[in-house]
Image (tube, rainbow, N blue to C red; front, side, top):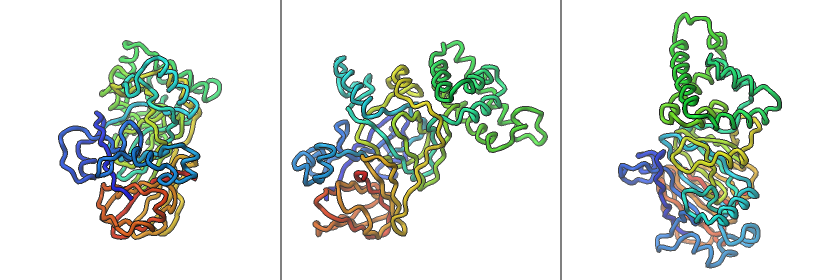
Length: 412
């Protein structure tokens, strides 16, 4: 069992307070977005003696990872955990399948783009399915909404271009229509786009005013004071805020077609390969395949590759991709989205029902706990924000105290 020191990544969308508060450190004035806990070469966690988790695994993969995991995934930890703190929207993005990741990685290598370059889409050859567990209220957008519902929401804007887009969504198959509409939106020129975003902002303001009127005028908005209308109100406000922040970004209009997802603390969302998404606010724990592959289409100052996103994205409409947990024991749940790279346990101490085999990373979400294993007689005393790596040869975990922990391990 080894204490871990994760690397904090500073991105513009990060919170200045959430991660420092979680880690018990002083804010430094910069936005702190992610804490990485894993063995990805981009930012491997370290042990107190200075070794990286990569070094630890490389010294004896079968012992540290377990023979089964080492045979399935090679000499690497197949999952990566992060604490994520979003104060502003992340980029509109998608993650690749394993096959697409391998192809893209080789293609960019052949083009002479250095690994680590900000102009790469593919920093490694792995796919990147991911699950986010909400520690606080967490908002985002994930997956394309049912086209009939999106058409209804668009028409409530009472704008000519929105009516036209709604009609396009209902022509032909849903996935083909979405691909066609998104392609056209992302190709808009600045003049036309600016006019559309200005109209959207005004329409959102009018909708907000009408929703509070005692005797509202006759309109599509007030003929539809239903769940769709309430969803539209939230969506318009969100999209108008994005339009003010990104006044020349066509990705803003794409968000009108995505499911608006709001997670309460304790809920989770699973994003499989190809699912277009963007987180907007909140603090949560992510677990994903050990990859840093991101293809972006907008809402960012980072590298954008619209043609690649249109190839990688899955345009089939889906419901909001919530991931329901299995109940393991009183106070302990397991999120198992059906991928072999990872599974996440979240529970209260005391518990002895945590995974007993395989490589594991334990992160304290709240309170104070003591962690021990079958082999290690020393018990690590940990508080919120602290983490440990437990090798496969350490045996079962025992957690006591008064706190809550998240434990990531390899999926079954």
